[in-house]
Amino acid sequence: EFVSRDAALKQLQESTGLADVTAGLAQNPLPDAYIVHPKTREPAALEALRDALQGYPNVEHAQLDSAWLRKLEAMLDFGRLAVALLAAMLSFALVAITFNTIRLQILTRRQEIEVAKLIGATDTFIRRPFLYFGMLQGLLGGISAWLLVSGILFVLNASLGDLARLYASNFALQSLTPADSLALLVFSAYLGWLGAWFSVSQHLWQIEPR
Image (cartoon, rainbow, N blue to C red; front, top):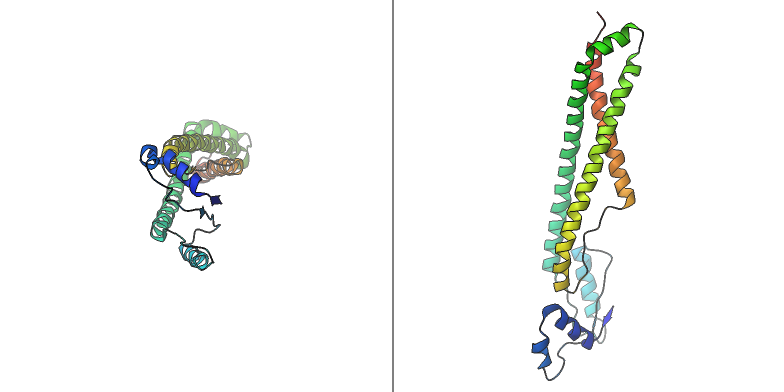
């Protein structure tokens, strides 16, 4: 991306509010520049690219803030790990909550289950509504998580927009794609089903007609 010296000066004036200061300059001190948008974020690869560009004819200076880049990469790695741990904890919590909810339902409907077994109902038949309820509970949990994440991203992007404009950037956190949203809901429903299955498998066999 080519940025002329005049465009760079105008951008500097708009982003920093130094229009009065730059207006007093005898000439534009900024050079013409090319902004390169590499596909990789690996610090070593970017440093090699900088060195290669520096060797081109008519290139006076190639700039890369590698120290800042390494800090950013470290923060991103930490963020990924934190998100993964949080997702694992929330998944375990969803399974545990569903497990206990189904356990309470089984205990509450103990007499109904005993009567159903007396008239010949199989464990599979009795288990089915509990599994459906667990799946529904997991799905509702997934919808709640989706709404929470979307709300947090909306609030953060509003603040990040002001910060990005100071650096003449349009950086924003990416919202969940339709595929990601669907995967979240399906996985949440599966976790609810899994918690219900564990609960029913553990408690249903203990109930036998007298």
